[in-house]
Length: 170
Length: 252
Length: 93
Image (cartoon, rainbow over all chains, first blue to last red; front, side):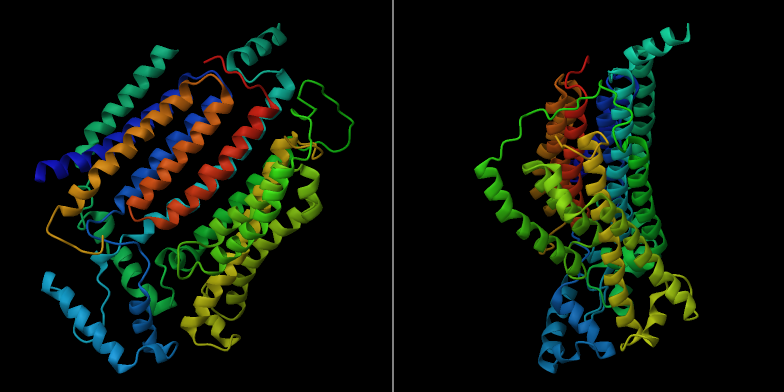
């Protein structure tokens, strides 16, 4: 089982590196400008995948608190206090103790303390979320430059554009 | 060229593969990124400090507000750059090399039009839900803005660019984009006027009838709306420029 | 994911799904760069984005997956298609 885990974990990283290589190869050698941009996007997504994979924790759930946890916490400062009536608190504590059986080191005394190991790391998610949207707008800029080149040269093949530029110099 | 590129790519890839042995194990809870106290603080304290159950939204709009503000500015700048590169006003320079005519003769298709007419309100309602409910479920300004912009793009694809521009004219699009940035930056400046740091929302409890925690909660919503304005407008603006080759007359 | 069973159980449940997604990811990336018709390349790139969205959902990054589904599979494919239709559809490589 340990070997399987190591292979599965390593496999993800290897695939990301292979995707990065595919993207970089396309950016360097492809002749068509749109193909180059698709390669650039593949390169970009491989890096995003790597960042998100750093946030993965085994046995952790999505970084959104469950309603019960949220309301129990919000009861502390008056807002939504009506949700945390005593019977509810008791249920929380019971479930907390149940959780505590698996991990005795974490003490769930009274209130439902949020265990950082139960949630994935939200920070890489935030960074990559904005990067995706910025990526698409920069893709838009690159595509607009491609269209401009097409109106100037009548082609989006790199070598034909270079030939026209060379013959224009002479 | 091809061989040279292949060698460069292979070299980079092999270096990274060799380095991948030093990466943390897959899903390791004790990896440096996960065990650092900043991300632990985000997970445990977000609900106490901002009352937002979705940590990603809270970190996006509150803790890393600077970052998000300037990401929005980058998107805005990209939209302006597309206009600067591609937009051609009037018919002074008529370069015939670009494909001027629409590729297919536009005939209103009954099935497509009826489906789109039914679908667009639902898409827009969903986009608003995604923006407004970003505190409790996945979503927020970026996603909602993109979905809202996509509804206009769908209209432009199904009918033509004119139909979509009857809803959001070019000038109005840009005003909307500017409004988004101004809403976001305005919240930050308002915090400064009240005597705290730029984008430190908790000081806003002085003018909002709530406590500091809920002031942060509500400011996050306002900020998300600003981001959504910008993203909606810029996505549609980029699409309409790209699809009409800067003429804003006929789409694809 | 809720039930945190013995060590490694989650991995053994999900790794086949993960492997299939990763193989398809590489395949779509290669195909979208190999195919000569640029319109097909743009469409296959949309499929690639959607597979990445699925992969992120598996990694419990729902916000990012949502963004990728809206942006990558939706808007960026439309941008590529509109450029391809405005310029030329054929690619030399």
